[in-house]
Amino acid sequence: MNINQGMSMSTFYGENPSLSSPKSAKNSQPLGIFTKSQVIHSQQGFQRFHNFLLQDQSAKLLPRERVGNCLKKRIDKDKLREVKYNESRKKAHWANVQRCGSIWSCPVCAKQITEKRREELKKAVNTWQTSHDGSIQLLTLTFSHSKSESLKSLLERQKKAYKIFLETTKVKVILKKMGVVHKVRSFEVTYGDNGWHPHFHILMFNKYILVSADLKKNLSELWIKACVRAGLSAPSMKHGLDLRDGEYASEYVSKWGIEHELTKGHIKKGKHNSLTPFDLLQLSIEDLDVFQKKPSKLFQEFAISVKGARQLVWSRGLKQLLEIEDKTDEELAEETENEAISLRTVDEYIFSLLCHYQKRHQFLKAIEDDWESGSFGSGSTEKLLIEILELETKRLSEVA
Image 1 (cartoon, rainbow, N blue to C red):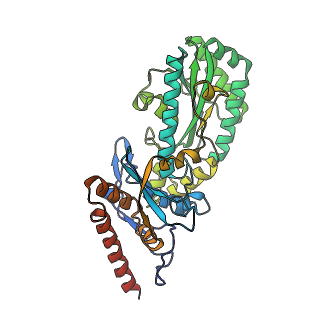
Image 2: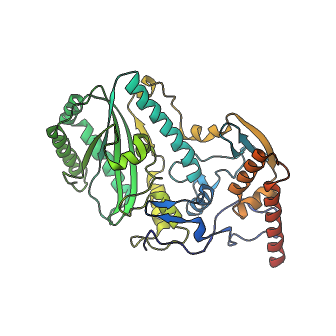
Image 3: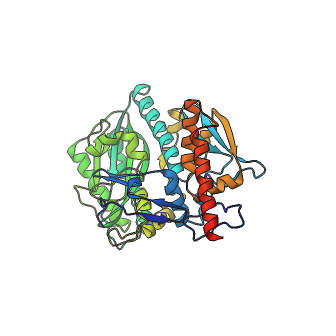
């Protein structure tokens, strides 16, 4: 399948709270419709229609994971779900609902967490350069791979190769000579013609920058040796190791900025027709083969393989040095509650209908529009609820 090909209409199924009505549809009932207009393709890659819809798809593919309850299951069962509004951000969000905090399998949580991680990195880089008069470099480490290799196996060997690389005495000497004192590591994974393509990005915090062709050549050779020792296929001298300065020397980094490069690896667009994990999630809705594989199976493999992995790994003491508060992904996912006012509660039946017809995101948007326009209580929100109730009345009459 050409990844730039448009998608036809496709029925989408997922797991949502059951409807209160005794005549509610069985699990096989469609929960919504994706159309071509909701999946826009361009040369730059996919423009995803909405994170809530992809979250439902992820829940379908990963029924045992927390993403299935994210923004659905109540925290306090004695209280109704609420919609709160952050006046500074002009955004509404669901409250008294669990958040899975998964950057890998939940598009909704991933968006919030990665944005906050980006801000942490932005602050770190700025503080290092201004308060510590330091410099930064971006090191990328990759290796050869084939379609026959599983992602889990590649990640295990990649981690081993990185450990061997950093513990090599010659590498320590070179990095010290280059002025490297701290590092932040992230990994990115895409899928393409040659299967899974995981690679590391390492943001290096330097006292000064000293780089020569010989130093880079020596590092490349040492990385190749580390890969071979770890059981990976040897990368080439040209592509295995890449070293860039902090001024976005490569087109890849300049598009995103260094902070984006590190934190948006599983969200941003893949290169050379490769697919990011959330591209695979989007394509799994129709589930037509890509690179002779089912996108659904590939996304499941990705989610299982990276479960529990940290998005960013900071050098010990670096966050404290740069006054970056240490927060978990779950804590970042919960921060939408800060400085928000409560607008309305939503009872169980209405919420089940919003899930059934995949309107949770539209409900929030309607409330935002009504609040901003001053028509709260008599505008888009009520029209949407009437529309959903009419759909449900029609559905019940058809199954009666």
